[in-house]
Every structure is written in C-alpha cells, then in structure tokens.
Image 1 (cartoon, rainbow, N blue to C red):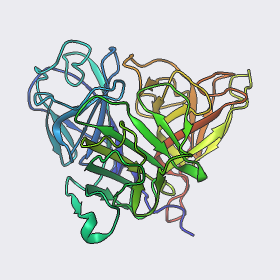
Image 2 (spheres, helix red, strand yellow; image 1 turned 135 degrees about the vertical axis):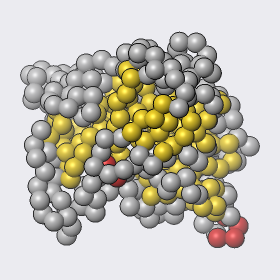
Image 3 (cartoon, rainbow, N blue to C red; image 1 turned 45 degrees about the vertical axis):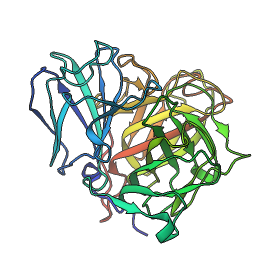
Length: 363
C-alpha cells in the first residue's frame, strides 16, 4: 500500500508570511517546493486585533468573508488584485472600514496567509434535475487529489435537500456560510462515524445532527433546514474536505488532563504537520485554535490564532512531529481536559514516508 499519494504537500497547501506596505500591485510569492496558485486564501494580521479575511476564486477575489463574525459577504476590491501562478497580488487596502477590518496590507503590519488549491478557478455546474446528483443545483471546483472543493448554491431551507460537492470521497468537514446576509458559520463534522454540527465563529460545543437529515456521501452533502447553512433563497458557499493519506487528516482525540507539560496526548496523522486547527467538541471552549509551522518553524509551536476571534497571535503550545502532533500544554480546557474530546484538522508539511519509501526528517 502506498504511504501517500502526495509527495509534495506544498502543491496544494502553503503558508506565506509577509509585511504590509499599503501599496497597490504588491506581489506576494510563495516559498514552497511547488508553485501554488491559491483558490482559497485565509489571511490574518499577526500583530493586530484585525478580522480574519477569507477569499476564494469561486466567489471572486473581491468578495470577503470573515470567520470571527456572522457578517454577510462584502465587496472589498482594493484589498486583493489577483490570484497568481505562485501566490497573490495585493491592493492598497483603501476600502477598509476602520482598523478592525483593514486586515490585508496595512503598512508595517505582519500577516499570515494560508492558501489551498482547488481547481484553478475552473468550476463545474451540476444541474441536479439532469444529473440526478442531489436535488439542489450547485457550482463546484474540486481538487479530488487533495480532497478539497469549493461549492456555491442557493439554499432551500428544507431538511433533506442535497447538493453535489465534486469530490470522490465523502467529506468529513463541511463549512458552509451564507453570503447574502448575516448568519453563523454552521459547519458539519462527519469524521469517523460522527455526525455533528458546530459554529466556526463561536466557542460552542458540538451538537449531534440526530433528528435531522444532515449527512455526507461520496457524491452529495445532505442538508438540514438550518437558516445558517441552508437559508431559504440565500446564496451560500461551502468548503468541503476529506482526509488524504500523507497529506491531510480530520479526526478527534481524547484529552488526558495531565498537569505535566509535555505529557499531553500524541495524535498520529501519518505526516509532519504544516497546519492544525483544534476545537473542543463536548463543551464550550475559547474556540478554534490554529497553529502552523511557518510562524513557528521549530518546536515548541507557540503562536496561535482563533478562527472565532480577531485577537493577534498568542502562545498556546503544541509540538509538530514527523508523524503527527503532541499537546504540550498541561491540563487545559482548550486542548487537554481529562474528560474532553477534541476535533482537529491537519495539513502536511511532508508525508511521514514518501511514495518512494523515503522517511521525512524530524523537527
């Protein structure tokens, strides 16, 4: 059995650090082994309490969503200029709404941009009545190799309606967002036989989807009647992911509550992580903690953001290892409560063992 289908994860995911200069047509070039033209950019000021800024090539580069609020999509056409063959070009950011929202290219501010590749902006339209795949028309761009797709559709408000996602396996993580009005980021976790919904912009515990029709299959996402994720007549974008051996992993771990630093749980992923996002599922917590190996290139990984909070990066310690990650913090509600269950999403810096049988180096 192959160890991985992706020897170079930088072809599909990269993290880029840059410093803003408030200047139009500022080109930002990625540093990975492979060129990467992003289809989804999630950017955040490292030094200021600015909003998270999410753009994608399906909605168009001028259209912004923010993960830490329930705001509708807004047009900010002076923030980005283009998605490029190996990075992106910034505008002068003169369309900011004040310091709390001006997040992309403020002079002297430090930024991080996490980038994923879908299908280069090329989309497929699924006419559900013609294809009999789902019963709601959708437009998707899918990267079946990397297990990632971006889907747009118009909600129905009906429990049990479904839309095509374009991937070859059932998504384990689905993050829809209403674009046409305010709504929470009500997403779904279908990992390991679980079926829960959550709110990316809040610290709430996960809730079982039992009692409604929410589900994931190899061809469609079946929706419940939520006004957040399936608003009647509302336009929606949905980010869909499934695990890919050696490149990405979506799952859960149990806390052990050890009070000794360095004795927390170890989570096997099958690769050296480049990026993780962690959230407690069984109780409320401070939120969705994001770490990456670019902002903290050696252990301890001590620079974190929260997807649901605009705060600048802070110290929450974990270790990235050659084959997974370890919770370095002692007893902690956000990462290591003795009775806690934690959901995680991880993307690779390198597979633990390449398709040629070559092991990765330790950190």
